[in-house]
Image 1 (cartoon, chains in turn brown, orange):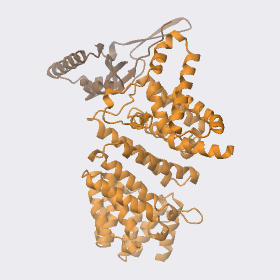
Image 2 (cartoon, chains in turn purple, orange; image 1 turned 135 degrees about the vertical axis):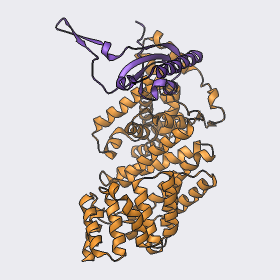
Image 3 (cartoon, helix red, strand yellow; image 1 turned 60 degrees about the horizontal axis):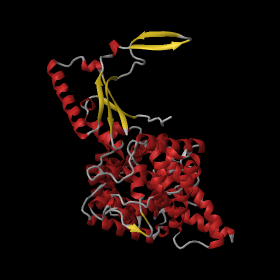
Image 4 (cartoon, rainbow over the protein chains, first blue to last red; image 1 turned 180 degrees about the vertical axis):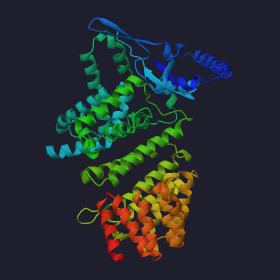
Length: 118
Length: 418
């Protein structure tokens, strides 16, 4: 089954990271990516620029309304994601616990909908 | 005649529902399909058993018929091509799961899959409420209406809660298996917690229908017995034994816990001759088995405390010294306000009221809104002859307590102080 693992963390807290912290974290993420690939569960994964770079679009009455920032202000912000193909939820939970961001943020696991072939 | 048959079928339903549904879910891979098919099979039983008599193994009969119904249903509802793979799988004889070897022996004509179902129903990604409802519905075979009544929620709310849980199991890929050894202790704790909550809901609730509440207690005890029968007899199952002992010992006081008006009677005031000696003996013997497994846990310690109360010929002859020692063990295993207050009370009874009060007072700030704390202070103050301070503490307990039986008791104590 495919799962999307959404990585949420406080951008405010992350703003205080030193370059050394940042490098160490990058190493951890590389190691996680290698482990996921080695287990054969990795589909894809990306990191996102902070919410200050976000644009939200809503179409109302045929008009595209563009606003600066994320769709909702939250305590923790979406900072990246993985899509993993796991045996079941237990394996997805096991992998989620290994994502470096789980230590100071939260990982939300969402199963991906598979639509029947038309 | 027909009513006899109904009674038989209801009995079969109650006893076999969990085992049959577990086997069906395993084979069909779908909770709702399995439940619908079993419902059909029970309707069929009402007809067939009337003419042909009750089969030798009703559970196997129901499983076979339900499986056939499910195949029919899949065939009818779905485009054949899309579901061909499912049908192919269903028409194959059941392949033993290599992962199961050694832990599930074939009983009668189908394996017992209830342990897997228990772990699925009590998966940590389901809310505790959903875990409880799903366990009662699938393993206990209680109807949605019965569960709704027991938890005082409208039937549609409970139906929705169950449906959402079943959908989540399917959509999120919650596995149907016994967890790997590394996760087993933690997952087993969660399972025991659900059984304990089911029991407590039946035992402690002062509202709701008495019969439904009793059914919850019986169900929790029955499911704990099933669980123990399915676990290897190692240290792993020590706490399952402890929980069963605890529930049996509590349940032994059922008849003495309420008076003619249905009001709660406090432990010290209960008619001990009304306690069920058979349940006490069984609880103590199961607790001995648990201790022999040499893996102490909170349920075993609580059961041991309950056993000491059960063995005391009168409230005055209670072995408070031993109870105080057990509460201090419990304080190390799982410290909480409830345990701290009970520990202080036991020390107050075993040593002196002053010794108990010395343990209670440091809790004061955190316990301001916890009425058992004030009740405990009041009792120990009264025993040490401090009438005014005792009356003050009873007053505070009265102001906070919602339970009618305990309120009445505090009133009596206040009047006795003059």
